[in-house]
Image 1 (cartoon, rainbow, N blue to C red):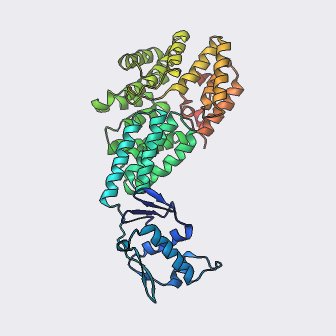
Image 2: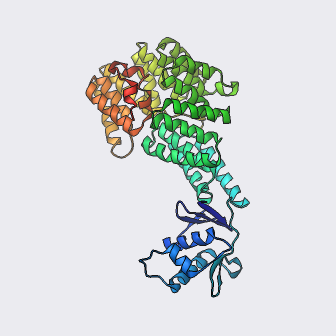
Image 3: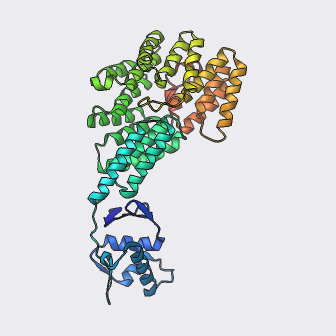
Length: 430
């Protein structure tokens, strides 16, 4: 059964129990909305008062013909600005009939408006700052208020939520759950929607810890769009987190030239080498990325980790501090936010360097911040690892798993937690 109806400038979203006029929410009572749904679903047919009362009102409710007439008048007041815009007519002695033209797809002016909102949402999303992603999500939600079944808007909103989860601007679990619902809805009408397929890949990876399922969705996304930058990254990244380092490098190297030269792909390749344990080669690879893109935080953070593993903690700490203290620069295209990763690795390094007072001060700042906004448990886990408190670190790691933080999915390959000898299969038990 259809759940969204379009007539004139109106959109009736039955699943969400909402009515919109040109994208603006129209306030109506629950019973009036139920009556409208009944009439619209049976457009062109005359429904008797008895049929209407039986379908809309409960048997125990005190309802009569006057009640139905009042609700019809209420709907006419909401829908009709003048007699020429009549949507509901009274067939005297028989009942009521909806006479407006009802369609399954939005009319052209609505489709154009949805397209404009989605284009603006995608543009803001490329900024990747907290403000940019919130603006992007707001634009996609405007598009969905006009056409709640738009695959483009559903997938765009879902992908924005995935980025918010990945950069840990909000509790990842909550964003991943909503993103999954929106991506599944998009795929119902557009099975080859690359954005939605990428979202499902990320959800399978970070929410369900299903590496095989995540890889299948990433491959479907690249089949639909071979140049999809997030899909291209995800396919190699899943193999890297799975410990299949040679496969990951081969996949990164086999991408089209226009994709393989992107900063995120080059960085993903360097991190794969880092996770494989070849720290010297990883440092060289990531240093090359940083030379080409000096302000790319993602690469600088993991270059710091490579240097830390090579026994150069002072230089590593300098890189971590650069990233965690950096200000967002809107001129840096597609900047991936790694500040929380840098915070955690900096805490670990400071404790290991015996800079205890400075480390405790930074940890106290994060603890205060966590009282008002989301701070990933990974930061506290890495601090406890640096401090050498195994039990406290494991408690924080458990919270990171409950939050569905992406770092939790990395634990099987992150070199700093190898000393805990964690079993990835045990970690990812659902």
